[in-house]
Length: 562
Image 1 (spheres, rainbow, N blue to C red):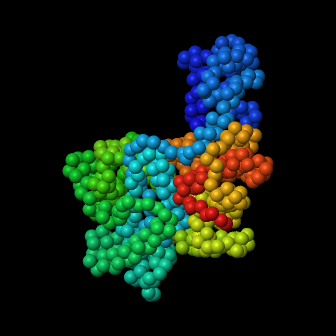
Image 2 (spheres, one colour):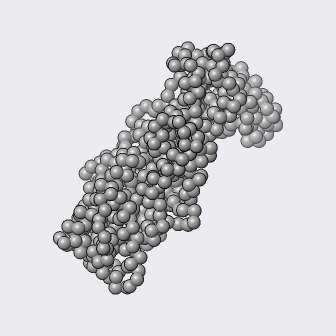
């Protein structure tokens, strides 16, 4: 709706100002001053006129040309500004009469998401990655893109080799059946700490990596068994976080096609040798040297990325964009990878985008899996549910299905904490802030939704009135709330274009705040004014459905009672 109103005002102004005049609109600080404003300073300066007088003259011309069928109801000249007032009843009718939807197909987006590496704990940083990828997928699908997602996870390489080295040489215990990934993360940290004790340990790990690269049968047997358990654990996490992943590509299956591609480039004379390794020189792009194959023929991460690209093309060859939802610490690497693809003329390289996200740290500093100072997923989930359940028991001890509600609210709290912060900004995880039912949190939004549903139930209106007099919703609080509702589709569009779920998260906080302001100022349940009550019930129902829709785009569920 805001797009329609803006377009109409711009059309009105350009009709009266003449073609070629650039029109920039702003919103007045208070809704009483109008819905949109146009400043006459630059126009007056170019015409060598007084801006106040120019505004008054323009106002008269515009008022005379307004159409009764248009969305603009009134225009006022306030000093050097032209303030436009929209037809509130028309806007209200359109905003409240139906859901936000987008028509048409916008192409296919392929997405690299959910990086759950084998034999490594899935920790709170991975949760941010998973939540961000899934939310962006949902937003893109909502605006008309077809989405396909894949998980590219590490199951080979030096870190896996260190893990296997430590497991075979030093580990004395049994392999657990439950909580495997958490246990694997502990082994990962112990291996990293052990290898630092003696220089020869690192050489032993390198030998393990060579054996793994060459698929030593003895090592492969234990490696496959352990990675299968790790994969099963990751699948459970994916299910609990409600993330959609269409394809899974372990690094190990990308090695052979990656080496094959690199060998073809060597044969074509596109790579050069540097100290025995095969490289692409990207110095002229200020990107250094990009190694594609080690001197001993061992595949590197970048070798496997080309193998991944070859396998990926067999699954989805025709895509509009390919988004790599990966931490910002990989930014330089992706610049190298994309530029190397450009140099080699790899198909589709120009449709690659790195959607970076910041790290998650604890209040006392940065996390590191090798040091073991992380909040692993299982502990994060269990502790959050425990704390939410304690809060529910304080607030509403008689609530039915408390365990299920606590689970939904806990996952909402975690995901909202990851998505309400702009992608590239780091997050300092704070339990108290994340679970504040009255702060800028997921539980606050879920509670606002449940509160509105409770009001509707208490009203006695089992079904909202079909014929509503929208002209009754005309006071300042109602108009402000309707105006915020009217922005929803614009926010979704911007979030999709910029891959920023935080725009939706913060819009919902603004909407909930505006609703609470409205509810304190306006009586909703008032049997003495049935028509006004019906109109206000429709209004708050729209707020509730918008919160529910917005949270769904963030991958967050709602509950009817809290």
